[in-house]
Length: 235
Image (cartoon, rainbow, N blue to C red; front, side, top):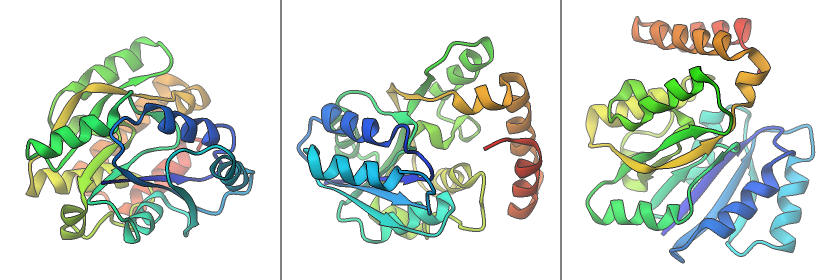
């Protein structure tokens, strides 16, 4: 069984549609639950999610609360998860049709951790170039927008996400998976929003993301990465 964990913060514009798409795109009958983990939203995210759950959800869904911070929110969701497989999904990313069946097929083949390739929902040469690299199974090409499935046992063995990282938490955790276990990249695609690129400017944001990667590779602390992100990137 799969537990889908979705960290959210002020996602009122899209949360109900995401939950609807998960209902429509699941095919295995083996989703134990969808856990929406709210980090203290100040908009109608929680209300819209609960309204969908109460008035139309086909899959078991719940909304829980957590301290703000994606790493903390994902750990909170994982703590009470029922599934043997955890599937972490960003609120602005849509998995492909049959995503759950595809994940279970990978697990049956012995692949206990992995992700999908990724495409953005907007076209731009920089985004096309960036998304092309998600096909390669190397850690430098990984990111949270590609989503992540991992066995619950493996997640626990790695002590979950490092909550010191307010940014870069996905890459840091996936790096530890690469260090200790096999990782697979599924050929199908998650479609993720390019909204942050629209807010910050595509070239500008890609530049700052690249600098953050280099800073981490050269030993920058979680606090340093967070300061740089807050200074240069509009959330």
